[in-house]
Image (cartoon, rainbow, N blue to C red; front, side, top):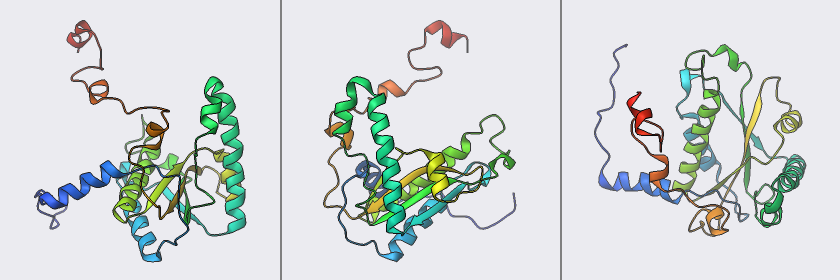
Length: 229
């Protein structure tokens, strides 16, 4: 490794650590926004945070499209609404409950960004030979960075995935091979939800840590299976 002066691996101060964990705890997938504009310098800081996310093989596969055209935003909203209805029908007995949920804020948020995977990703082999989906994992890291930064800035952010990526790609003139991953609604909010909205609406609940954490084998695996390791 080339020798360059690094940063000493000292822990943050107690206040700094508390701020990081607070941002994680209070981050919410927001759907309700007010019309106050987002200051340009704040938006740039959010984009900086996203662009400094980790990426497998340092491929940096994320691309960001800021939507400033009102007519284009309206057409995007129509795509979301069309998929919202299709999703509701696919849910069967939960259709009515789903239709009561607010799943996006495309027409309400001060800023709308589309996050996409860049074309030409097949050229990146490092870290992806057996796990090509790591390009998507890298983009998810960028979105999470932006999400936490938004909370630190006192802004709300909502990740909308209810759309047809092929039709959105066509609408935004994306090159062949690029793929839309998220519509991000960003803006000021009256209040953050005290708990995740889907918990409040009794759609789902956070799983206990014991259900997702195990040691040496898959959660719930038999002792024989663990011994086989």
